[in-house]
Length: 385
Image 1 (cartoon, rainbow, N blue to C red):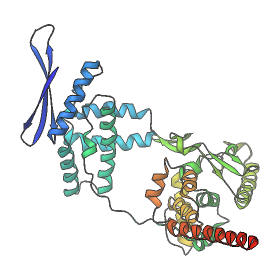
Image 2: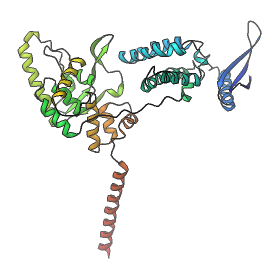
Image 3: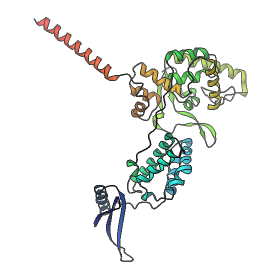
Image 4: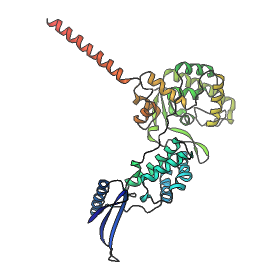
């Protein structure tokens, strides 16, 4: 099996002679183009010849990008939360398909994608952050196609995404935390922001927490469920991602706050009697049903307006939890596990500015260890002198 490499315009391509068609007896050739250098084209040709010889070669898809992404959406629907699926679907239908949908996936080039991003930015169609979301979607879809052999190569690896300006992260210091908690301790939803501040749980995880996942004897909260919006309605369901399943150690103060809340909840149950539909929820409305994010948000914002602290989002209470841990010089791995991030890299990317100067701490530890060893050697020397 032979092949040749040629330059076509500014790009390189290769052609492989793959023998004669068994029916027409005509010679069959396979052409692949779109390489930025001769070296890349030649390597791809050698790899394809090897795959053809081994019988492992898979013919690239002939689908247009619009159809290919429809298949990818169907694949992802069974693997991500419904809200995430809708997030993907919206960007694909509203932006990717109109611009690139008619291009065959196998013919899509790095430059086409970059020009698409640039046009969205220049026309102020989307923010840089939204364009970055599209970049992640395309990278996932095309990257998967390249891995399973449906697409000849992953062109997204060479795409330069637009730069996303970092938003300043807001969070409270301990004075603000104490001030807000002290002022709102009698509020019906007090325990929700208390848990956000001292466990780092997400809002949906707090609203989906049940008492069977609160182990007061062993001082642990098990994060297993979350309140999610699925197909237009809220429901409590299992978590989708493995890292989100976690155990969070809690303190005696946390136990006291939870027991106090549990007693108040017990009084509401007695008062409501048969009208209370008990779902064993830690955060429940006056009739036992779950509390929606909208209702919690209204209560939280009302309390914010009555307390002289910086106005931050409910989600920023999670950032506040991380900031308190880093202020206590906890290891980023501990922060990652408590927050349920997929990797320590995610934690470091998000909170690197909060991490104390670890090199300074390491130098101090080394100096301390050296001095202790030096003192020990001096003592040993004095004993033998």
